[in-house]
Image 1 (tube, rainbow, N blue to C red):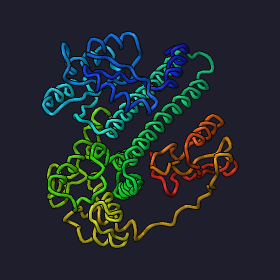
Image 2 (cartoon, helix red, strand yellow):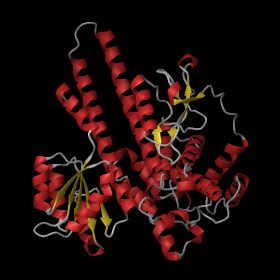
Image 3 (spheres, one colour):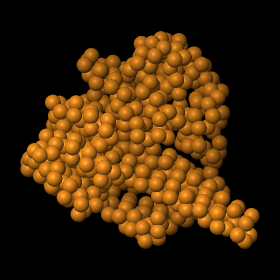
Image 4 (cartoon, helix red, strand yellow):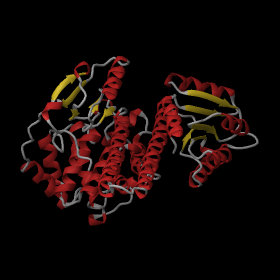
Length: 451
């Protein structure tokens, strides 16, 4: 990637995302335009697939939303051509129940990111568009860093003089790029988790609490750092499949639901696994998400796995999830205290939970070490200085995460934080270590590690 290409890519990233809406019914196009115009997107319209292709030949488009049933060329055929000619453009198909088989065929061909049944629910459609755009921009950033790494590797081959010193310098640069990629990936996953928690309302923070406990249990059970990180990511994203659920099902305790509604909620584990299907680094986490409602006695879902046939990461996630859910009232209508929840889990050993995981869980609380001394202070945005290190995730009241712990502030980032605060009706408080206080602890007391 040349310098000119990098400047062009950076300029494109600063523009609002462009949506192309394709439908042969003008009232549908008008409804979609009204839905997305307040979100700040650039909106383009087309009355059929051929018009949509003509628009794409003239305009850069980030995401296409197409109806299934259209004359001349149906939505699946149109999006298949989009996938072939403009593979970086995300694709969403609107379809009725009668077209479900065609939508599934389009998914299997890889021509669409997601299909959404009509009539759609406005908030669900907007969330799906945000997730699709986040996935696109994350993939673009990953590819940019990969190109940067390859270019730096090529430069290493051309070094002649001061080889040892130059190799050491370039190696440090590559390591920094690799660490940047890992940090960006982990931060993006936390951002996704924050978007999920925006729908949780009063129980916001559930995913982060589950991820933190599950990560600690994974390490105590002998998992290595990479395996424990998979458990951490699964904890952050374990409810991603619930995004499409109606608000009523999200806010009603599971035991208070009827049989039909329970079945709808139970599908979220399969949908969660499917949502991560295209992200290769998250395949192990996706497996834990699918099985985190399996029970040790075989009475769980979706596959009825029993005993040690349940992956250890999924066993850990099941316990951590239910420990928090018992306290916030999303399983039963009656909330439990932390002590009552621990007693419940101990009683369900060999039934709901595996014995090794229960023993590690109880030992974790019985032998909990005192937290390390926290050297951080609280700052308002006007007090921020370059060189400060954030020690806690910067999270808004609605659960949306802005920055993860570990970021080192510079002038540009400080200015972005201040501009953001001016645009919202909320004062931000940042936990950070002043530049003179040195580096933060490896794992801040309230933030799960992201090794």
